[in-house]
Length: 465
Image 1 (tube, rainbow, N blue to C red):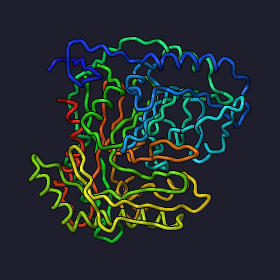
Image 2 (spheres, helix red, strand yellow):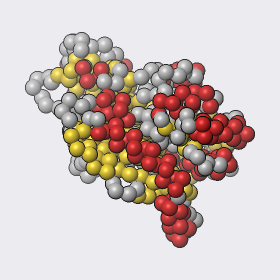
Image 3 (tube, helix red, strand yellow):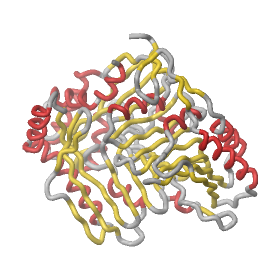
Image 4 (tube, one colour):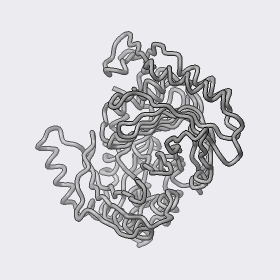
């Protein structure tokens, strides 16, 4: 393998030279227009923000969000796309930050009577806020969400480019970023080769953790515990988070995609199959995902593996813990609730899971923060009972999960889409640390669970080939 691969963003093929026209002319023109409007905005009152927006692209002609992000200076880029592809969000810079829930108190005000869309906040919360942060997670900050300084958003067939200005937004930085985004240029995508470096503490440490979890289960202290491990890769040069996410997305089309930078060379990203909660007005959707089988090498093998998963008493029991928790959480804030009568198969590129969908008609006054507080973490990423499982994980896992398995997505006045940040990795310069977990219940075998996490890491393993 060459030490560097140069890949075309448009085709995904590897070549010696792959320049890419990263800024469609219309987006560059809109960026210049917004810069002029930013200069005309007067002082913004504390506790409020303004949104300046313009249409970006004709109906059915959404721009390339990854190409747009690659134009921006690294360090404060964010990205999210839902599993159905109806929502896509990318941003550069931060206009304001707030604790999740408190963000709704910052009032969006109109300028000159111009009606605009509701601003979307990028949400990223740690799995276990009470656990001390490892040094690698400290740059990501604490619990909260961010209002983007510059936002590119597509919902259904409508795409807008927008700027947000709060009382203390760094307008000089916003104008500088808009100037960069208004300068179309060729972008050469260089992808350093990845080499697997280590598997965390190794299989022996994993086996010990699984056995400790099983001992808790047999004692009656737990019914399930979800253990995670890491795998570290080292690249032959600095990794571009946008390029890494683009490659992951090309291999796994059925998933929520996300990226959060915490400074140049630092990013958390992934393609996750799991929704925590989606809200549209007063309608909420969630799901219970658990149980795993690999995908088959052909159609027959794939069908047999799926049938094995559906028939597995162990996997059905593991998934039922999640169904029970999601049902109870949403029932506490819903006027009515609907669940799938039986789990279905959620088939992804490398694995397949059991999944049960849950729909809720919310009571008036239920907020996105209420929904996340009630649902996170589910037994799918923590265990059961949840509170006891989290305490056990602080003992069994030798690392801080940070944002891994935490809520991640976007929220606005009109709706929210929050995923669970699994099948994810943290980038630091030339190093990528991937995370994967497995649910441990009575009957779990440490070696089988180790292999299951290996299947879940295949998306990152393929980046090294």
